[in-house]
Image (cartoon, rainbow, N blue to C red; front, side):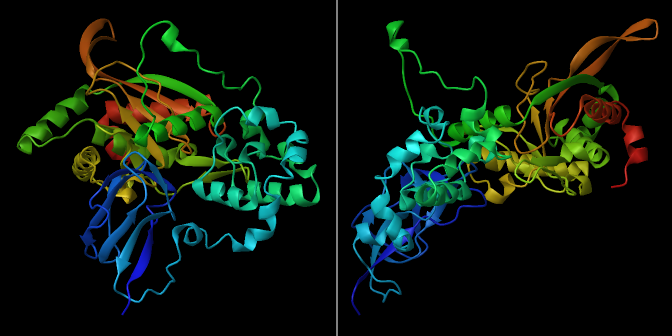
Length: 443
């Protein structure tokens, strides 16, 4: 039985995840590895994962070094096995591109037709100044079809170039060069950076002329956060509504329950999660997303509440699934468990997906209020400040009450100010008067 070289491609890392950062190899070239032994650690924008070896054998090649970005489907290792492989072992250059064969006719024209296409679309100059937002699979398709992504008008959120955009551009270039220029008039075109008035990235100044600087690459979660909040701020018109909840009685109840449970951790966050889920059931526009391609509002009939967790790797949003059907004690235990897993890097990808509404709590760190950025494509996000004693007027007296500052930032395309006021009014009432919440609660 002759040795075969098995090419291991980066597997699917979860829904919507197309790439990851290489953290560490567990083996070296020439080493022997067994099936299911740890091979490589990869960090996605969701979590850090250890990928096991699918085969046993000798490591022939490891593709990439720590800090490199790996894309799903990319060959990351070659393993010499003594099994009869089901796939032939061609050398790396030819093996890495088995699928592009159908696109071969377009390959010779990859660069020749580019000049005419450059001159036709009016948006070309605006698209060539910076990186083009596109998934790795879309970039591969563009390379296979010989398409320059900087010339393709993006119809996805935030001007993101989709597979359909690339295919449409390639088809138009081959048969009717003027067709790509028609794309900006479509319904998705206003989201493209070149089509947003006054939106143009200016070159960064040379900061070293004023003093020493230190540069480090934007990698891992910080890179994902940067992309996410930029998309959110550009695509979703943000409006913020602020109010205060008098949580004096709720805070007293929380302290009693914590003592009764022997000091077990119980913060205000689980109460706010549960109250928010109840409000979302009454005000469905805040548990929705706007689909710009179909021009539809998607109302979700499930209530998964994400909460922002500050970790050594950056901001991560674990998700409490079906918060409306869980007790406050269950929500509290889940928050503690998810936050711990997020901080030590062991959180599962599925625990970071599916949120319909997000809460960010700066209270434990400090600060009175914040205006958070919507966790796009959600419709709203709730910001919690620090609950603290404050003087409050009650009738003709000034009394000290525990006040929790709240900020609701929402997508004005989906909801109006009056909608937000009604949502916040219910939320404040539930937190200030827990008995009214119990009277209205169905689950």
